[in-house]
Length: 171
Image (cartoon, rainbow, N blue to C red; front, top):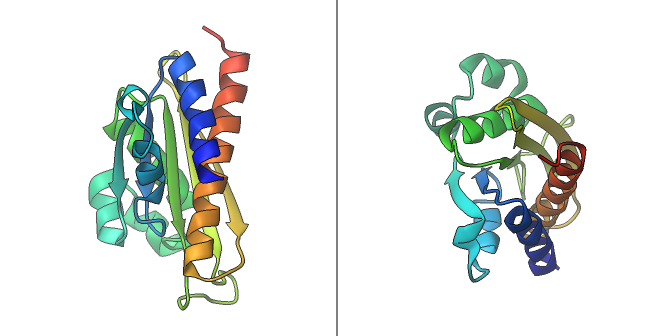
């Protein structure tokens, strides 16, 4: 199922001569790994970061101390800053996927249970401006199931965001 999602996204990116870049925390590089598992991915996949610690999110992607203190590492605000950081650090990329979450089995809290994952999707518009969307989901299952569901959701949502943006601005 993930492979179909990757292929669909890759075809959309290739058709628009666009590149994807990623930043992952709880998925530990699984999105980038699923992309590079496809032969020819260098034509549409630029680069990825695994920023598991807060320090890595700050140093590599520019997530602010203020955001981490106010909202936590697992928040839409952090995911949005991660996506912005990806497009800032990867200037050739048109599309960014950022993921941060609680895959379990521990680490959950009443407001952020195990399976709670935040996503940031970044698009670089033709004028260079960045558009960032965030969303949170709660996935059921063990650590492996949460991570797999997160990857599939990220790929499918990135495809939807990219397709919608390119239909609105076909240039």
